[in-house]
Image 1 (cartoon, rainbow, N blue to C red):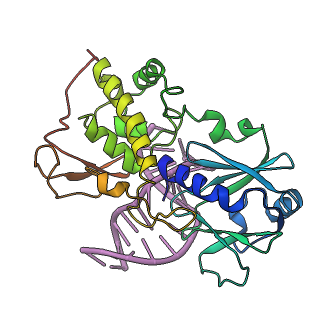
Image 2: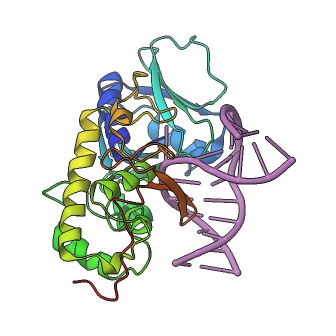
Image 3: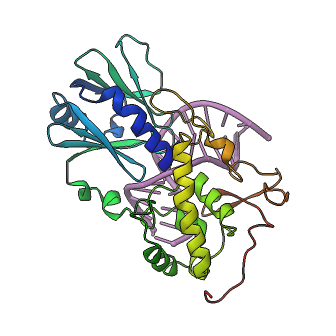
Length: 282
DNA sequence: CGATGCCTGCCC
DNA sequence: GGGCAGGCATCG
């Protein structure tokens, strides 16, 4: 389900539902989701209370009051929900259950079982390789345009694929990659090292603005995404190309086409987003 | 690097 | 029945 705006929306909606609650039990029916193994989780999580939830890129960092952090990645279909009564029937795709002292439960549901939770010592985030390598958050304070330009220069592959590289900038997934490229009038196949300085500036600007706008809209519910309270986002109404193959471009009316870029479905306007033949950036 | 695996459900 | 799906780790 989730790219940065959806994960951030989950963070905000989940925190008030579990903050300060003490965990009294944890169980799973699909142990692979718990990377450190169920026994470790039971030993180091049970008895602790949730203090807050942070986020880095698409990772949720559930902070506990015993110096431990649950690093949770929802991958494609993961979602959290909270029930006040442990007798509430389970869904067949519920795979991890945290029971709290007050009898409520946090349940992790994941239709494809792709999501993962890893227990780390708070402050040792760098011990998770993907977190150690993660690029900057796409905010004005953290996403440096010059550094972004330097990274693009090092990649000759399609700009679409580079945007999905979490070491370049954190949090962009398939939907927002297509959207920011449309906003920036860039062809998804344009080699990253051929973007002009002006194009990089526009792209950088659009990444920040688009993800911010998507957060404000509660994320995109293109497929099954809902937040921790079961609410859908509304940003799907603001999408210009994602999942709009065969419909007219909002700018020029040309029909949106879908291609494959690096094994990923990719949507763009062939008129607004022409591929430029260039040897070197201008 | 690009390709494959992880999973299940849905759509053609 | 095959291909595809919001993502990432792990091959070769």
